[in-house]
Amino acid sequence: MDDRTPENRWFHLCTTDDLAGPNAFVTTRVGAVPLVAQTIKGRVVAFRNVCTHRFAVIHGEPSGCGPLRCPYHGWSFDADGVPVGLPFNPTDFQLEAEGRRRLALHPASLARCGRLVFVRVALDGPSLEEELGTDLFARLAALSENFPHRGDALEPAEDWERIEVANLRLHLAPGGAALVLHSAAPPGADRRFSRTATRHPAIADAELPV
Amino acid sequence: MSTALHPGIIPEPGAFLPHSHFWTGEAFALERERVFGRCWLYMGVFDDTDVLTAEMAGLRFELQRRGAAMEGVCRDGERVRPLQVDHCGGLVFARVAPEEGRKSGPTLAEHLAPYGERLALMSTNCLNPQPPVGIPFQANWKALVENTMDDFHGSTVHPDTIHPAVHPDWQSHLVTERHGANSDSRWLLADGTAGWWAKLDAKLRMRRFAEESVYRHIFIFPNFYLASFYGATVIPHRVDPVAPDASVLRWQLFLPTTRLETAREQAFHRSTAAYLIESAGRVIAEDRPVCEAVQQGRPGIADLPGFTGIYGRRERRILDFHQAMLRQLGERA
Image 1: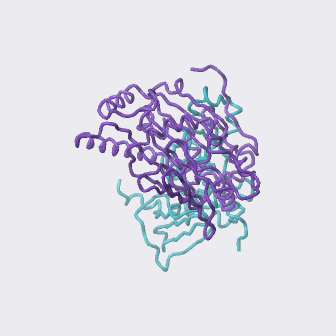
Image 2: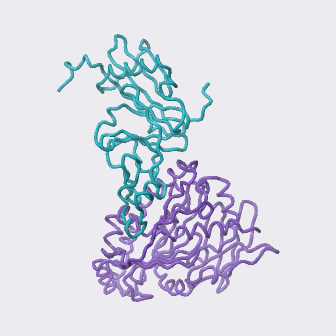
Image 3: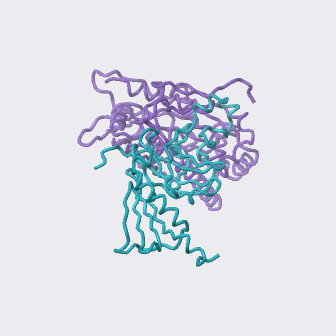
């Protein structure tokens, strides 16, 4: 049994496709900690999803597309988590570069395994590969790369292979016809942070509608 | 615009409430005992029933008026304690009477200082009461207090409601007075808004406690604020704690129309009151998600040392509130 606190464990968040667009983001919660992974100017970064000004959750939706901007007072943050847009800064805060850096968002750990994106609250600890083990990490990476296309939802059957890792359950159809990914919401997160996706292999490209 | 320097304040630990005070049962119990069980609290404006009731942090307050005399009790489960009841103009306040041997605490006038006279004057406009409104928030009551004393979220949270209603150069015209736990902010209304109120005044002949084209917001520790528009309409608000992570914002509109003789005048008064209540409700509906976002966010950074936020020039009232809370919570019986 894993006796580590949720904050010290990796959790599957999404796939790289979910973060492919400019300003695409995906959020979750681990224990009491809201997390966000977001693409900002081509970089995929992860932070605690809490504004450093007055502590509001920045992105309230499980996923979406939009700048990393707090809904309360409009503070916006760059890929390093540093506030770059501060309404009324000249009159109300007068924060220079160093002051802004002090108010950077707190980072979270982010790791990829093929197309799979994982996050962890703690900054220190074993890498995702160390945690999963080299063989399982390689298998997951290969599987995710072999099923690059998102498709219509399929219900896994009894004879599908089942792999469980962290909060992620994968169901592989016989013959590699499809892969269903189900991410359970981490401890402390409500059900809207659970995600299910059905993915199809690259060889099916020619059969997919244009 | 003032050219004086007003750098943001990053408070030192001990200068503001610990984050955990926004969600733990322990903090809620302490507030129940030392804030809501001791402070003067706004109860309402008596109507024909001569009865006022309120519930805050699990304490039930029951007041009665008999002639000029007012009395009441605070029920806490089986425990019943007498209330001290006093008024400031038409605004009625009460507090749990100090137990024998405990210091008597401030008088109501001292508690309201320096706004007693102004509140009494404003309360003369508590005419034509509209039905009280209560809006639940899934947030600690202090998140709502912080929100209401934050003078600069209008452009982001209320871009289509409050923001266009105040003067475009609101920064130059905003006046904030701070007097420890109590404070006052005044916003100059936009010309169009002031004109709208002037037309309304011409039709309704509103009683005005002051010739002022402002939105005024007086905060009285711990959970009361009186808002007014155009020196005429007054809206008492009270933030009632319900649970560590839940509260209800209660408010009541008074539209002090003096010309209510004809059916047409009465109908216009009713429709105006309904419009103002709907507008106020829309503003509060905009505040609720951000208060709830703070409630969700705070626990997520509470483990990080030095994550204290920053308070800008127009957020000083919030730090004043934190410090008043710390003083009140530190007070020993």
